[in-house]
Amino acid sequence: MWNFKRFAAVLVLTCVFTVSWSYGNGEPKAAELVQAVRAGENWIHDVESLYIRIETKLTRAPEVIAAKTAELKQQYPDITPDPAQFPELKPVSTGILEFAIDKMRVRSLSEEYGSRRQVKIWDGKQFMVHDASLIEGPEQYSLGRTPQGAFQDMLAYETSWPRAQPHSFWWDVRDIDELMSYYGHAEDSSIAGRCNYRGRDCYILDVPPRGIPGLVTVQTYPGCEQSSDRRQYGLAGEAVDLAGQSFQWFIGAKDNRLYALAWLSNKKPRINYWMSDYKEVRPGCWLPMTQGCEVYRKDNTGKYRVETHSDLRIVNVQINECLPEKLFRMDIKKGAKVVDSRFGRTVTYAYKPDPPDLVGKALPESADISAGLPGQSKDGKMLVCFWDIQQRPSRHCLKSLAHKTENLAGKGVTVLCVHASEIDEEALNEWMSNCNIPFTAKTINHDAEKTRFAWGVKSLPWLILADERHVVRAEGFGLDTFDDQIEALQKQ
Image (cartoon, rainbow, N blue to C red; front, side, top):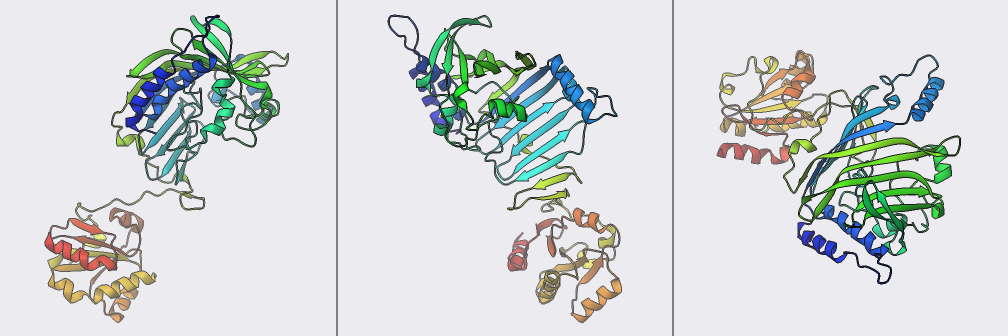
């Protein structure tokens, strides 16, 4: 995806799939109508970047609210359910959808105002999710090591376009040939009629799926998550019984654009998606700026009624523009629950932010550390070593530095050892004396964690090298590169 050199090819394909007409009856060929619609979606694979912001409105049928209220009363007999506590009881909910994509990064935002908010980000290095219920807590963050499968059907899951075919992207690689059996092959389609759909002359196409052996991973459509629906209709993506399922398309007779796509089960409506107000957002890139869908459910009398009605309005589209870094940054709150799957196993913990990087910044001020420094260190080069006497690597580091005492002194570098946790100073001084450690030693007497954070300590031992002005030039390096760091400081 996102190969700009292929952009011209999309324009050519769009021209190739112009619809020819069958002689004798004046009707177009169904397969070519399907191909034209699908070619019109393919520009999303050939842009360098894409940003879309959508305003959403969800309307719930009174029968749905009544049924949900009864369910909640049974579940919570001691309370009276109300929309303020249970947003799913609201007749109307509004929100926002946002998608940002470039060649290395992906971001999606789905928010229902006053109820929930979910942000997914792949920043090129790690996958991050922030789930927040604005009514129930607590919020949660998830971290992963790959975007594959994390943004499945990212656009089409909550929008009506692009839905005419499966799509494979760099962040969600999929088997298009296998999935096409579910979406329907162009050569299997047929024209079922012609009608005025929402004020537009449209052809009605039947696009049947083929039988699918085995499990196919595609989107589960909203409205089919309940177990009763699963038994009756099957989940989209499962090889249940596709014989009774089909798609019906409504294609503009004049422009060959898709204006509705209905999912039918035994010729009864399950979901109806519609699109309108197509706009050429970039040469050759047509996007329906108004979209929506209706989810149907069979009531007690056997009739199919609208359960929910969604309206979407695209309010901002940017193509091939530089996307700001802040879109792909996620600031995790201190103490928040984190589910981390980046390193082969899943662990859950309360988040602690990483300490700041100090390179290029002045050494932090700390009363415990700064007080009583030797005079020559106040305006000279400094090597600060945070360590812990209980850790063998820390003890080894101090002993190794002790062997470099004359070399460091000759280069005007003062060494300051800071014990990274509270300790009895008498015991510390005894150990340093016994091991012939000649450096100035400091202990942190108050709020050790806060001090370590301020000094950017990420592990122990931790070395910080500063110049004559006490500006940090290197940090976090090991003894294997120690001499190189000292030489680099001398050359500055």
